[in-house]
Length: 491
Image: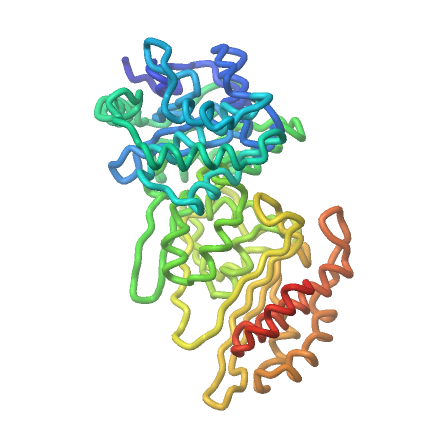
């Protein structure tokens, strides 16, 4: 295929595709169903919650060909350059025989009405490609982003376990048998120069490098920068916004790097939750369980750490713990770089300290000093795949006498931005880390926060929950498992 800078190029199942007409807000789901008639991919929620629209997207990551489940209902078509899109129609063999994943679901009665089944198939297929012997925890985590109203999930989990126990040869598999050729094709499809599509009012821009991205934003400071589209996708499907231009950055390897140093971890703004999870959990173990509760598997495969920050949402899950840890942000533009503490990036609701033409380039997360206590707690209506009512992060340092020498406490969902509890911190400093101190400190929360009431939680609930999370931290860090168990049971 001839490479041109005015087309989006990718592989769909076993066909190379080149598109010159790509509206800025067209979703991958609409294109698959309406333009290619691949109707096995369903629309359920149109907001990345139900998983009925799941497909696999293959991409080159550090030289490896990686396949991930994604929600096509919020994935924009313009982000697909140099990827391999795999739909459920691609799984069956040439003679019509079902793929082992499909066969296992049928054998274990994992489908009733069938509407959600293709999405489950694709999520389990992604697990099948990535993990030869997944256990129950891995299976359940894979299925977090797929909802079913019929089967009760147990037959679907049993199907996944059956595949793991009797894994057949992969010779027939459409991806495994063509992996080398797909890698070669995707490498050839990577943009050599910036791709520009559309007319004024409906433009798509795909920069070829970070330098090109900086130049584009210098010319288009009001552009919408899209990495994972887990939030921007809802602007399109729920708010019907027109966006112009849309600048896609999910393909830029410079923004997907994770590097270690003696002082901590540097994470590129384009690193997804899935990519970042193990590295962050190794640095600060409490961050692993938090990231595992951000959306479902598909959302974590799309959403990025940098996007969660740049979006500026007061209920984003990553800013509170990162602020408590003292993370620093690097912003970049055509004129250079600028570094600032993450907490200073958030000014007020909907406003961040990002100058015209600037974009988030990377985040530095420092190592937690030995002996310091750190915890992060997410409170939501349901445990998995839900937005926080509030998220609290706590970092406490004690001196040899057991007194609080330093405290950094930050909450999301309690104010118009992620915000530190400065009055609570000041009250704790210099006092013994005891039940009496924590009980007295609870009243300082009213000086720090005046939360709102919305459909996720009332203001009174948020304030009481924030106080209780400080008590939970004390019980967790003071070796009181019995009291903590009773406390969590009451909560």
